[in-house]
View 1 (cartoon, rainbow, N blue to C red):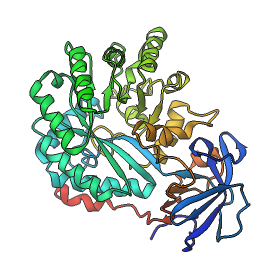
View 2 (view 1 turned 90 degrees about the vertical axis):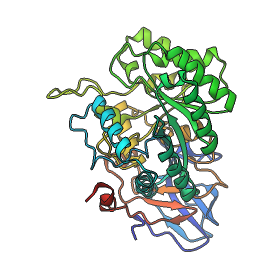
View 3 (view 1 turned 45 degrees about the vertical axis):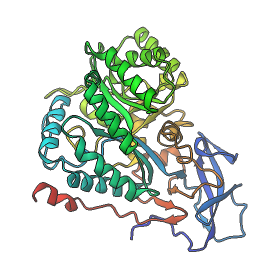
Length: 437
């Protein structure tokens, strides 16, 4: 069984000594400051929970695991994925790598193959991978384009029940904004979300029905107590400005729930004055923003035989300066929108630091896959290290940021309730039966 680089004692109470922790993930304890937002501490684990955080090297009344300054993180939060699409690449490739062809390929595969059993099997594979990598909480978007409603939501409900306590799941109903103009679709979406406990979502674009669609969406959310999570302006076109329209709608309707917006790629293509005005509105409206750096780097500015000229990501650093809560997430996994990926939050974080320049300094960067998405998903009990919480931790040999970000950290140890889990990843051959192999 693959359990990582360190042996965890069988004792009910033990100490993770000389650990290095990202300070932004720690509540209620000030450890030794070792620079760049890192602190040194001992973590006392008892009965599957964090009993206490103590000064490094101070606890000697229990079995000691000396981490030799290795980093310890809380388990991760991946707040924007597409588990319903995951791993269909083997039967529905996207040879051009373009956004338009990705849409067409997914539409064709969804119509031809997405039964509840098919979706559930692919979700299970994805969740086993995420769990092995150290993820604790996932929010997935679920395609809700008629006549697809019946297949994926039961699969999601089965997965949510089966994985509760290991990887907790939330789901967002994903529909084009123009469908919100149709009362029948709105009623069906409302019934679906009431039945399965989901979040109201969609994808926005510049259409004549954008403002009216947003008004219907915000009204539905207010009337039913739904939070909102939208795909926004996933394009290089600087004239795509639905992010501004969403912020204005949230302010206009005095919406009191949580609004999350993902992608927001076109913002980086607009002139500074226009982008600043939009960012001010986003801050005023209290929107949270999630960037999907790997998927957008893959899709955006892709043209045959031409090297891309921009990175496809949004203005995360400028958002943070305004106090906007920001996060990064996996997005798609081995499907026509992104041919790669394994729901590994360490990979997402590492690539986000590089692509978005979240470094120099790195003091607060760990928030984007831990405390920030946990707060947005209304789960402040995960994504942090705090006395009294379950000992759901990820242990690394890396001591510094340079060591952490220079390698994949494949030998990490994942603790759940204080016990090291089996980190063996599922074999892709297990999916062969879905693809006629």
